[in-house]
Amino acid sequence: DGGITQSPKYLFRKEGQNVTLSCEQNLNHDAMYWYRQDPGQGLRLIYYSQIVNDFQKGDIAEGYSVSREKKESFPLTVTSAQKNPTAFYLCASSAGTGIVLEQFFGPGTRLTVL
Amino acid sequence: QQPVQSPQAVILREGEDAVINCSSSKALYSVHWYRQKHGEAPVFLMILLKGGEQKGHDKISASFNEKKQQSSLYLTASQLSYSGTYFCGTEIWSVGAAGNKLTFGGGTRVLVKP
View 1: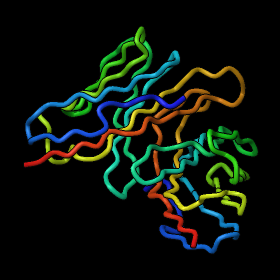
View 2: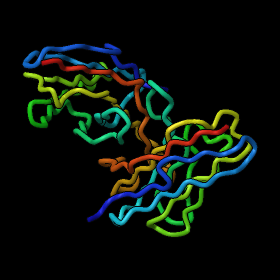
View 3: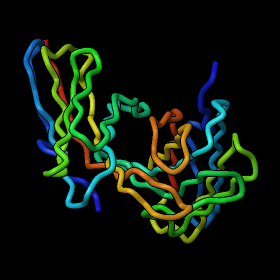
View 4: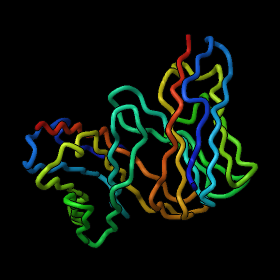
């Protein structure tokens, strides 16, 4: 079955540590996105990528980094520079480039920084 | 700039109707609607392109008023399964290689009671 996988589902880290969240898709989609969701809030865009080896900052990119070395993979690193990293992180992909088509979301990773 | 959704929450009895609004201060290329159940990933409902075309998904339909930069989601004869948080995502046309992105509203919580 085609879809998006994110791992792990829950992640606990100590303050000051970098942590990398995995996102893999087998939908052959060109575009991939990372969103952050805080309790009771909407989705805020962190980074997005339309093609391999290229990515763009979203609305809240500070304290995060990404890479897109393969079409199917778009890992997100939450660095120690992110002041309040505890949140629900969602990865999504869509078929188109340029315009935004239907986005398919992964199950999310809930990150808690202690 | 984040689109504004209203109301923030609505409680319905099974079979009742509701309208959720999404307004933007910018000229929009498209509006997307997603539904998220508690603790799960958002699920795509529909896309409306500028032109005011009304679309439907089961008994959920939506419209897009290009002049007002406003979209409305209509929940007709609501079912228990309609409970969740509804998000609109707005797309603004972007010139350049970065491609377009979605900006999500804060969400509308819908609770359908028996």
